[in-house]
Length: 91
Image 1: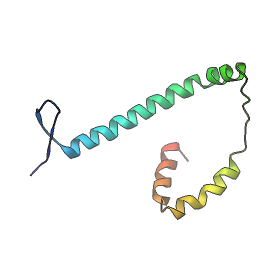
Image 2: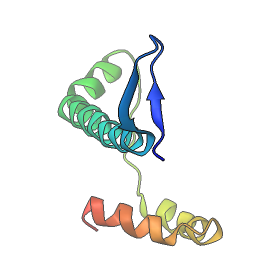
Image 3: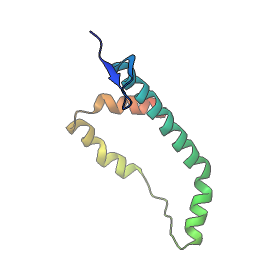
Image 4: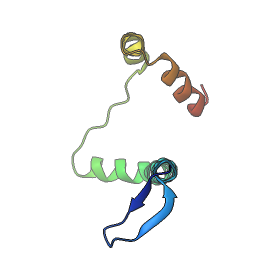
């Protein structure tokens, strides 16, 4: 027996709950990609505006932060997730 979704108006969709979940996952990823790309495209302009308004932006060495967070993935049992993320990031 498949579960259907009842909309606020009372219309029942033939689409199963799992299908809606998959649609939400896919659209969330698309929205995240869109937002990330928009931010990256405007990063220099945003930084310049912040500097003009008095902000100080420092470049930092990320290596120590990465080293210190290594244990977090193990402690939370996220090694597999970390590998997935690194794959997406091309690492």
